[in-house]
Image (cartoon, rainbow, N blue to C red; front, side, top):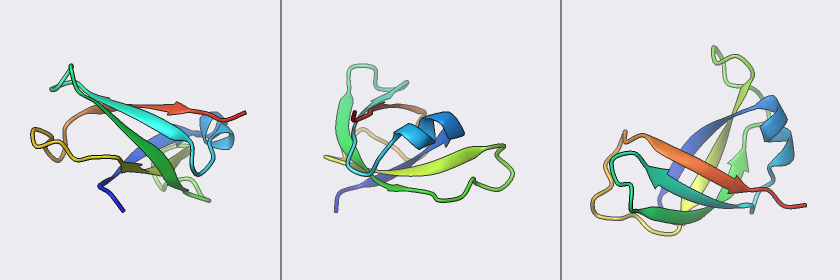
Length: 81
């Protein structure tokens, strides 16, 4: 298993995502870097205190050297049909 990150999805988006969907991740601090990965887990229950948001776990294809914990990221999930 590669490096792991988490994303929070609203209920409408969480209902469309499935384990195995491909993702592309970009970072505010590293605008030229795009990392691939896939959805490996979707919470069955909304996270407490977050409204109606579900935690989605993503496994990254690689862990670039310049990447640091806590950097702001945008996760684009390619939802299957």
